[in-house]
Amino acid sequence: MSARPPRRVLAASAITVGWLALVIAAPAATLDAALSPQSLASGQAVTLTLGSDAALPADIDLSPLAQDFRVLDKRRAETVRTVNGRRQVRHELLLTLLPRRTGALTVPPLAIADMASPALTLSVAATANPDAQLLPAPARPEAPPQAPSPQAITASAELSARRGVVGQEFVLTVRASSPDGPPTGRLLTPDVADARLLPLGTRRDRDAQGRHVLEQRFSLFPARTGRLRITDLGFDAWQPAGGEPVQHRLEPLTITVTAPPPDTDLERWLPAREVSLTEAGPAEVRIAPGQGIERMLTLRADGLMAEDLPAIPLEIPFQLRVRDDPPRLWNERTPQGVVGYRAERILISAPDPGRFVLPGPSIEWWDTKTATLRTATLADWTLTVAPFASADRRPAARWERDRVAAEQPADEAPETAGAGRDEGSSSEATPTGGMAWAIALTVGVGLPVLALFAWLGLRSRKRKPPKEAAAPVLEPEPAERSQADLEATIAKIRQAYAATDALTARSALLSWAAQVWPAQPPRNLSQLMLRVEPPLRDDVKLLDAAFYGPGDTSWAQRPAADRLAALGAAGDSARTDDGEATPA
Image 1 (tube, one colour):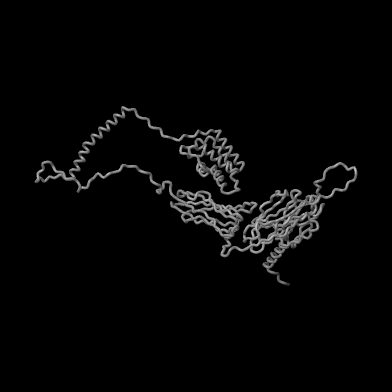
Image 2 (cartoon, helix red, strand yellow):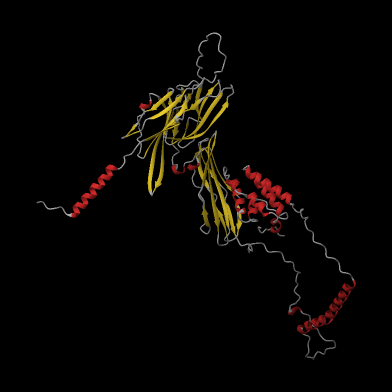
């Protein structure tokens, strides 16, 4: 008899067998397929989406589709999501297919690695001739109608320049024109290796000869030196009667790309048509200790995308407290190319008094128009931190009478001798005794005279009627506002917010403030913020920030007009004599 295995060995064997069973039973990766749409007309394209949890290889055999379909475009996409703390990645391949015939077509299965997609069914309907009309039955047989002739299409492509440096923007324009009406079809997306491609937009117009033009522009940014080759240029014209589109292909274009000048910092390489630095606000600011001030700096570059712009360098003394927000980046796409913006908002404060000069930032960039190195700079920014009752302020003038020294030196006092004094007499008049005699005489005579004049003055005041005090000269007070004027101004504010018109909204808000504080109306939105409290202050602050960056319309969603209307007659109690206000 053989000995039984130990229990530990049996337990380990059971765990191993169970793990292998789970691995074998684990579902293998599958390849899903979907069509969008599932039915269409002749000449229209359909999108076939292949998806899997496993990574899709770079080279995929699409030859099974060649019998009934033509592959117009293919692109990849990835979707990342987290489920129960586990990261899942979904890989997709999107194919744009153009059917070659009408009727019920079958999208055959596609094999990718060890996976296969299911077969799908597509319904393609025939397109009626748009020129056909309902006519009465002919008296005699007529020849069958002929198919419409293809549309006359002329395709062309051009570049803004054929030579430049690495990172420079090249504008590529692809056109399709026809004298028979707007070109019906699609412009191909160019294929460029080692370069970034940014679509600028599509435009339809007419040229000087009256031809209909379909135009699409792209921005190219080469990533390496050498000859850059641009392929897949042309236009696919769709036919009214259906069938395979007519291809109009163009010869590839090339660009000669050179390296930056020697001794150039590639990390700070900024080739552009124009670069500028701007700041919203004055160059000299005065605040109190502990008070904060915002600086809004904007970097603008013609011919560069916002994600390629560097941070704005600032030298800030260590005595200042600094808090900066994340930069705001946006691109403006124009027919001449892309314009990148980078806006930085910085909050600066100081706990102690002092005067600080912050050097203006500077950024070097390469001018692609003149092939020279240039620098964009800002002026120095001065910050004075002093309390409101600062000793540095100029003291007020004090008016006093001039004082003349009344005392004479002792050695210049004249000698005074008594009348009929004998030569042998020992008593002499000293300077101190003469001064005391003068003081006594002045007090003895002057005090009665002053008392007499004071008594006469009081008596004359009792006899004469008092004169009325002159009224102070005041500036004329504007006419009191009426409720109808306030309601009309609030209506203008509501209309400006509805139309997303920032300029009209700012003007209407300042008009409302001038009606509430006619003596000292605020001159800008920053002064208006000091007169009101949240949430109305937040609405005004958001509107004021909209003037420092285009495209920001979040201020229009704030109910500023409703808040002003809710104040109502409380605005009368909010105004004070000195122009300040206490929110109702």
